[in-house]
Image 1: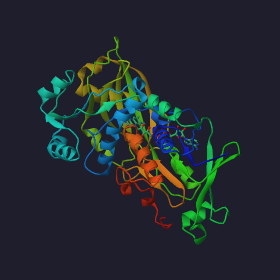
Image 2: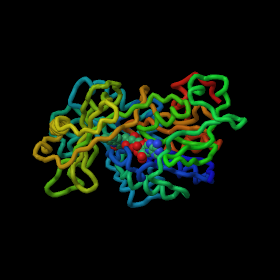
Image 3: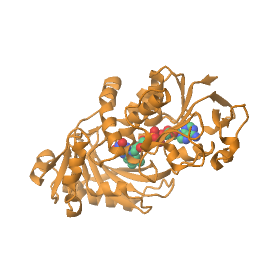
Amino acid sequence: MSFDVVVIGAGIVGASTAWELRKRGAAVCLLDRGDVSRGTTGLGEGNVLCADKDAGPELDLAVAGRALYDEIEAEVGAPARIRRKGALVVHPDERTWNAEPARVERLRAAGVEAVLVDPAEARDLEPRLTGPMLGAAFVPGDLQCDPRAITVALAARVAELRTHVAVERILVGNSVGQGVDPLSVERGADAAVDARVTGVLLGDGSSLLTDAVVIAAGPWSAPLAATAGVHLPLEPRKGQLVRLRLERPDPQFLRRKVVDASYLLAVASADEALQTSTVVETTADGHVLVGSSRQRVGFDETVDAAVTDELKAKAARLVPELAGLEPDDAWVGFRPWLPDHLPAIGPTAVAGLFVATGHEGAGVGQGPISGRLLAQAMCGEPTDLELAPFDPRRFTSAVPAR
Ligand SMILES: Cc1cc2nc3c(=O)[nH]c(=O)nc-3n(C[C@H](O)[C@H](O)[C@H](O)COP(=O)(O)OP(=O)(O)OC[C@H]3O[C@@H](n4cnc5c(N)ncnc54)[C@H](O)[C@@H]3O)c2cc1C
């Protein structure tokens, strides 16, 4: 059987891409080696934030991505569990506070409603924020959603969804129908100049023929790209979250998403070593979710009890009442991370091979818009945003871009 496009990975990025392609009339096959949204998408906090960004292409993507959630809410309805509660970036520390007025101005210049508030105003917005602080930035339009439910809903709208089907490698040939060695693509050898996708090889040894493949396999995307000779310096960035149990569940226990300003520094850093910084909120079922850690240690699934303790202690500095709550769960996930902190969205050096990944800790907010932008580009439409900053070919100049 052949398809116009095979999309690998049914996380929020792949499901969004497949949905957008399908809306444009493409015969799409969406594949996942597991269940829909059971990769990174099923593990995070579901925040769609502009508050933690700064001027540049990622903020532009975040602004357009958050706006798209109006359409997602209309499309998916109540199961999307969209809660427009706003985000507070809290500053206990002068180092970040002194720089905040200028950053808030940059957010506003990019079209984000944002205000600086003093500690009393911050506590009006979030009464349990009784720890020491110098002030906060408030972004009222930020929201929280259920990324699993959204991904499941979007994937269900794609005509051909195949789960528990692993892709072993991308099949690449040339214009005269010969197979092309991925190594020659990587080296930029003449033989690979007209390298193009011909299909994908599946785990059971069968193949799907297609002229177009999208790799949206989250933190697992790099080895797949390598099977086509495409270099993507993507790594998993481990993140741990902790759930604290409220005796009486209360979704309004914390009214806002609360972010310690040091979180912005942790996201922007490229450190391999463990970093923890506070993000805290109530979950839709009325308990408290505390994050998060960042560490570049490969696919290490260990839940570290010391990290749980540290996350809880840091969160309690902002919200002292949390000190009395017990952790009832903790888990890790792997953010798809690229060294320049921008996702890769667009064509590769192999004709017909596209990539949509590398959204790190913001793929829920930016996944749907990435899917739309890629579908627009693949279908020859003008894109809502300039894709150049996200060009996957920025990591390899070996093969001439086509
Ligand atoms: C702790 C934590 C908290 C987070 N919080 C937030 C947040 O609040 N807001 C936000 O915007 N983002 C958040 N993120 C980031 C966000 O979850 C990711 O950026 C996003 O889910 C990435 O989606 P994806 O579709 O690219 O990848 P994934 O969801 O990982 O999907 C990739 C899919 O590809 C499949 N796959 C892999 N290899 C193959 C193969 N060979 N064949 C077939 N299928 C394959 C996998 O099974 C998987 O289902 C968080 C991440 C973590 C870890």
